[in-house]
Length: 248
Image (tube, rainbow, N blue to C red; front, top):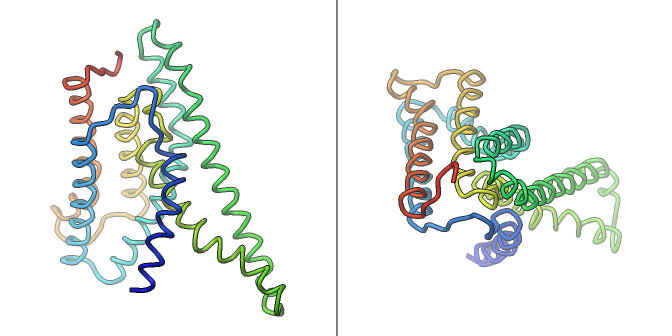
């Protein structure tokens, strides 16, 4: 319990700046509490369904592989967004009516700044890891004040920077680098494209999971299909409840 009472304030300390930088309000973004609740519910149900399938048809090694794969996807998704996101945004703006393209392009500064902050976060994380690993042998011989000086950056990395990085990655994956600032429908469109890219990579990389055919299908395509359905429903809700269309 004392550990949890220390952990939660620390996580909030990392979560607040992560949300401020990577999940910004403003621009064309539309807040819809119903969509937010449905997204959270789908995520929870998806996690439970995944573990249920691995519990019934997988092994302990499969569960470990699934946990490692989920962590890898959290880190890989922002990287894929950095590569594929600009292409999707460019095509989205090209598809917009000519009279709206200039307005959409004028809002690109916020996603660009978000990309810059995320790249800076990764750079600081990588530099901290490199310095720590490069000097781990030297730290073993430190004592007194020099040990304290060396331990402070390591403690800062473990207790704040690492949680901040994972939260930033989660917010980036959800907001698609704040592209809703450009157009409210952009995150849903980008999410559909990205989830199928990741699904193809998983199918070709790790192969088929164990279990009967229906379990394999659910494991590989249940997530992408449910995310696609949710994104299409979100686009429909934006159109019917908020008057936002992809070309509008």
